Length: 229
Ligand code: DC
Image 1 (cartoon, rainbow, N blue to C red):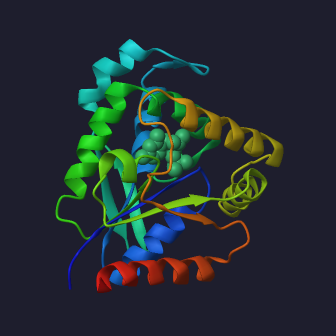
Image 2 (cartoon, rainbow, N blue to C red; image 1 turned 120 degrees about the vertical axis):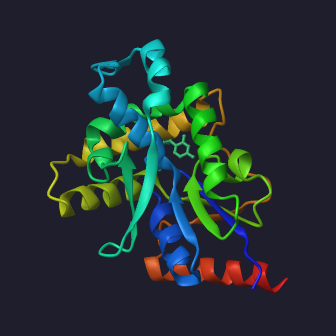
């Protein structure tokens, strides 16, 4: 069967990774969470003195980029890949509020983006990949055969992230999360390099009132339509 590239872009905490991961598992594709890569760079910057509060020393981070190596290893227990930073598992740490509050600043830097995009293109060069992010259908794989642009209301997205953090036993305040979701939407859409924008040929899906099963079935149908054509 022909292999294709599937790009899933959209706003933060929309459930892109759940959707992408489930489809990849079902059709035997590799799943890549590109946001995890920006989060790992942010964690590295935080742990190596590039941040003072939320103030980033851009030049310091620039000199450190060559020391940052990100990889993924499939975790059979969770059924999804764990993120490794210089061979150390950072999957939980990159999801903390501290990282979430700083990642948009790091993801807006051109030298960070060019390095991440190059690595993402290597991950996807054999096709058979489902990648989620903000610029996958526009910049990383503009020729992807199937592109989805996912959205949901900020309140629903904040509630989902709140539930996720609570389930992991992490402290969380709904209001802070909602503020963070809105702020990241703004930063993602207004940055100079690769702002979040729907690719012209992407299919729009608002999943505010859909269950995970419903959105998985919707995506499977879209995949089958492309494969059968
Ligand atoms: O999807 P996420 O919330 O884990 O993404 C973390 C941050 O990384 C988010 O602020 C947007 C940014 N990002 C990006 O700029 N480009 C991508 N392809 C993926 C994520």
